[in-house]
Length: 62
Image (cartoon, rainbow, N blue to C red; front, side, top):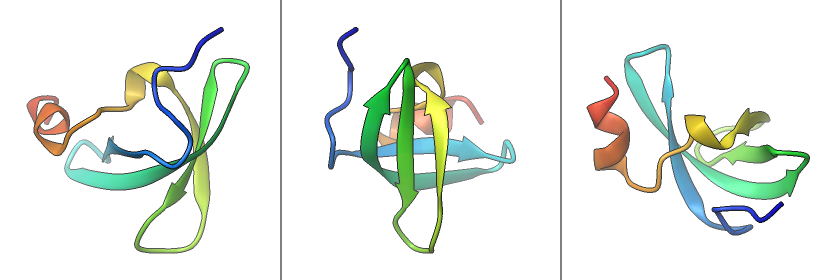
């Protein structure tokens, strides 16, 4: 399966239905992206439909 986002690319997610959080793609496997927080420690694994290419696209979902 081909991934939409490249490793090292910045993507945006919506957190708590209130915040837009920038993240960096670290890995892609089995339909899940491993993402690293830019401004703090830690990471998360999410499906592609939870990710947005731009901050403006993420703000539409708020």
